[in-house]
Image (tube, rainbow over all chains, first blue to last red; front, side, top):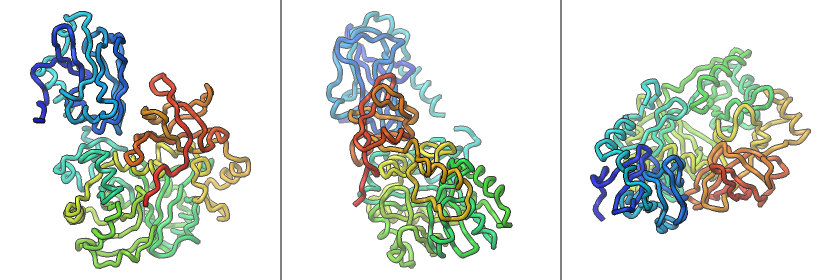
Length: 133
Length: 365
């Protein structure tokens, strides 16, 4: 598999390092390459079940690495329609393929306007480069 | 990173090796190079090398040196040390709380080196000087000393290739002086991982030469540089206490399970009366190892429950790369600390099952 870009152009980002990929009314969610690099060695992911509601101001799960726990915030609100079951046995997919095989959940959006409040790839890159310094 | 953070003489090397650096106790230190799990497993199966130059070295000399050390530490430097021997010991306050845990090297009857935790160097130096009523000469050698560790089953072979000193003759917790890659070093058979290994002390000016020689030798057998992340997982698997997490001024060596480091028959040392009293009355809590019974990770300060009763707090907790489960330490009331006792850890507001297990968690070959 070719190496994934660091800031894929087709995504929107939340400041808390989650990405959103829109396909119609469905948004796939994962964490950014920067976030997985900071965390390293993911050992466990706690995610909601399909059917659960997610709200912007509420964490929807946690990623545990050897080093730390990382709280997950949804880029949009809505209903969880699918959870990445592969992560149960292979949480390292988040490190290896943060933008593809390491996706976390799919959300049926309540309000597509929420996507407009997210960061563009350039804005997110600027944010991350600020944090690195 | 703040400008005020201290750096070891090997800082530029870590940068070049692509280490991820973090703040640790006022130092800018490598937390990892290739990844914590990868580095951890390298030490368990092969060889890892560590820059531990942030640790402190305090030299104590003169006729007053031994009496001073005997007063400071709970262990017995007079009867357990000879030239070339090393002793681990807590250093306690009057209430039996642990000021620091130190390693004492005896070079001669009147010349010793105390190796202390990086975060405590200044405080320890003041503490030691403050109790020096025997006229010992005390010098803080921390800034002029590099400390490089080789840990893992291949450490003896790799080190032997770099020195004329017969290192197989060196037993656990003994040291000698010799040249490694041409650099004058103190070669110490010690470590914080549970594996065979050595810790090498040298003058800071020679640090880069010493590291490079060891790094190149290690690389030929795929040995790896190891950061503080894996140092933590390695030591926790062995239940080696980390100062600031598992032991501090409010915990005693008896509570921490360090009974073997207290020489009660020594006629005087700081904290003796308090420790004798605690031993007589019996400890109320004990540092116990636990294993999570699901995949959640307990972290320091998380609350521990037993049947809805709040019984303690986690002091260390991590995924164990060797055992592939999540482990931790917590002070628990003695009655809740028996092996196999079911406890619960409060993780983000939810109780997760765990049980008290035997330690060390991991048994090296």
